[in-house]
Image (cartoon, rainbow, N blue to C red; front, side, top):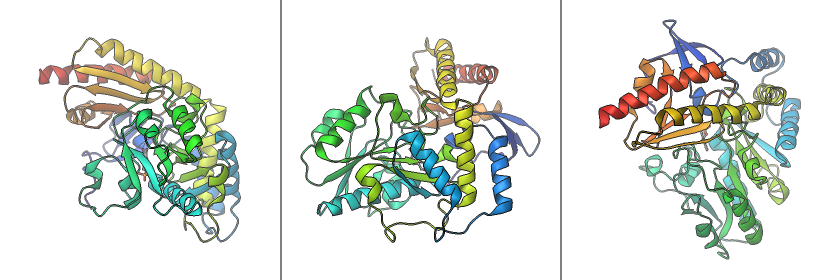
Length: 387
Ligand SMILES: *Cc1c(COP(=O)(O)O)cnc(C)c1O
């Protein structure tokens, strides 16, 4: 079904930040499969783990113990400070688990209309619950009736959240530490710790969607760690398997005790193969200090783009947290994706006017130079054509 409008190219091989198409042409990848291949394409440690595990055992279902799932659960809880993990196959499913936890939490407190606070411009996925939580009409249009039990406020606005204090229906706040699809929107500092404090005083669950920001992308293992904040629920996917489909819903304290046998599940979730990939990703993240590299690389790329582009009035802002990088222009610029593609550079545009870069976190500085040089001159050329 035509759910996407792909560029006219098919890739058949990848290595690090490079992709080769069926004609043997090489492309520099600054999208990384939408923040998925954080360690670069075909990372040898992940490939090795998948090959070894697939020869041994791929799937048994959650009707039996799964050693890799337990090991990955332990690795994720110790890395994040959370208590327990539910494994899914995608980001949307991880968020579904979080939304169900919020409702169970409400039902346990005899709240008849348990309501989750969500943000404008947010993105949480394409299933019915997650598209309802998403703050983008294009994602929702035509799929009504949407679900009940959500209330929406502006992103980055603690006063708007505080104004909901004492509302007896509210059970949880679902928030991205940085909005990715929404335009690489970075909230004011103190936002996450402010949400934490309001959740504590109101007994709301703080639920962070780290599907895009997690796994080292922003310069910390998880973006909440920039503010030393521990949420009650945290969702992961994208970079967790470096290309192997896997998601996770992590929970802490009371939220970690809500599901019981029968209340949630997944046939594929947490299978030995997907968890082998996740374990290899975490090993590489630790041994190669991926989060630290991402922080420096993101700084380097943003500074370089800033030096090249800042003098142009049509460049509204260059924002980054680690390797989530956004260049906001004054004009709609989806055309830049094709222009860059013609120069064998893969970039993304989101929220119509924001060039979004999500490079593999293992990109070298000379590859970053190549990315910045090509992109800066393309943006200059594009803006000149708009003037
Ligand atoms: C990509 C994304 C999702 C959805 O993940 P899928 O694996 O596509 O279901 C949810 N939330 C955020 C913040 C994302 O970036």
